[in-house]
Length: 141
Image 1 (cartoon, one colour):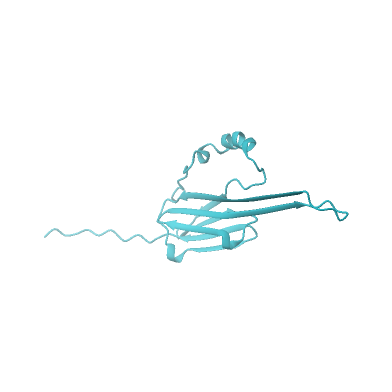
Image 2: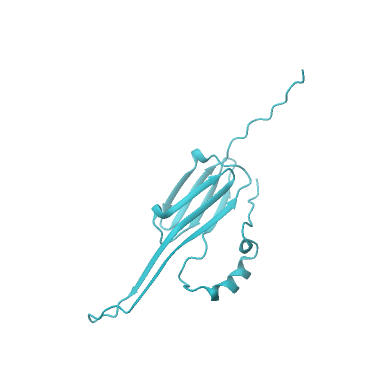
């Protein structure tokens, strides 16, 4: 089986180290940080599961360029605290932004046959491997 090639970003190489130093600097701790993915492989395809909770499927974009897969999402979160007793709201927190993730696979993907499904905050991708042309030896004339 082929290995998955990662390390598109520095935090892919040292995720725990970056998380420890970057979390205190975030303005909104409820804002999504990164899209977490699980990738598995068979002889015929790659299976990708990406956690993107709280996003509408219309706001998710998946692009494939040979063996590079890119997932991005527009994130809109609103939280309003009601005080009860008919009082008006004094605190309303909102977050609008985007989250994205890109990674390379060991083999090129057949974009036309790929399938994406989003359900319960999880994006599931089925990415068939592109059939490579058989090598051909030419006779010298």
